[in-house]
Length: 270
Length: 285
Image: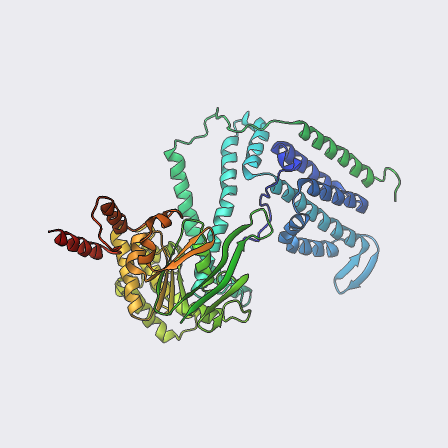
């Protein structure tokens, strides 16, 4: 279970780690929008290079970022296959019974696969370089305008940070319960799909019980310390914008312009 | 059945920033019939070591033999090993899951492929051994039981498959003094029936002194002592360097020594302490 790498913070002291979480969030959103607008293969190559460079600067091992794709590879394959057959535009390459493959279909399938992969790589780079606390603080700060129309942004932020905080705790719990049941002869990697799903029951039931128990205890602990989301809470660590945030924004901005130019064949490369 | 550990090493999350050495070159032998205590401060590697005994953690460096089973071999039959080496985790009551207590206790034996007719008997025997009334609890949901009863039911779930070697990870954590004594007496009772060897992690030195015939001390992932409790607790100063306490009776007798009443020997139990003290006081008269 410790192998789950998607979204786990990877401590380092790089420039990307030190950036303001709000800036990182906004840039990631801009990146995702760009990934979904781009259509040309050359632009995808440029995006790949950009992700690679950012990973190198962040000092997160490239392999770790690549591993995050593993979690969605199943979805990518299924979606690509559906798109491969669903799109019937362009020249027909081969056809069998009700299935026809066209060059248009292949292009959409590849596009979609690349988009999903870049999406996950980009977001996991964000979570690798930003602690959950910074992330939720950043989101709360970005949601500031919503506060003006009485949306409880602080509550949303605290719910999010608790949820994030609980992921490693529950994962550890799964580990422990699995070990205990294995010691009683349980086997999780034998038999068919149904059998395996059934074998997980002795893990899931104690897990749910303990999740509810922990939630209860946490609620009591919050109450006992008179926690409430009063409007004028101050912060122990206040995030401030620095020069590096400006530089990062500029670089990303230039890069986005570059990709858009390549995408629209501005220089007549192809 | 003998357990032999040779040059065991283990590292958590190797080659990442979270890398941590948990066990460093550990070697020792546990003989059949031993009740062995494993002590050490938090994070010294006790639990990691114990999880190796029934291959819940696979060996990365070193060797472990349990009887004639080689735990470092790839062809190891996990079923046979885990039936032989029972493992009771910390707070075992959190692993209860079945609809009824009986089903939960039968989970282990059924997994190990024991015949269905026998399993019912084994469950009944194990539950009664832990002091629960079989007819009263068998059809109850494990979640309806009280805290102490839950722990007993969980212990029954481990001992129902009749392990020859029983590993206990802090079996008395979080219990009241009465509950602690009952659990330890149960371990003693088990030792007299089918369990031949007991390995017990504990932070409670009184328990170690009273129940174990051997003790292993881990400090900073290394094995620093492998000796008898009497030997170990005779040098309280040495032990304190590792951040561990001595049993209450040992602490009291060393205070008496400072005050001029030397008992001569190191007592390990209340009874020993009282008899040593009365002997000493009679001598004075």
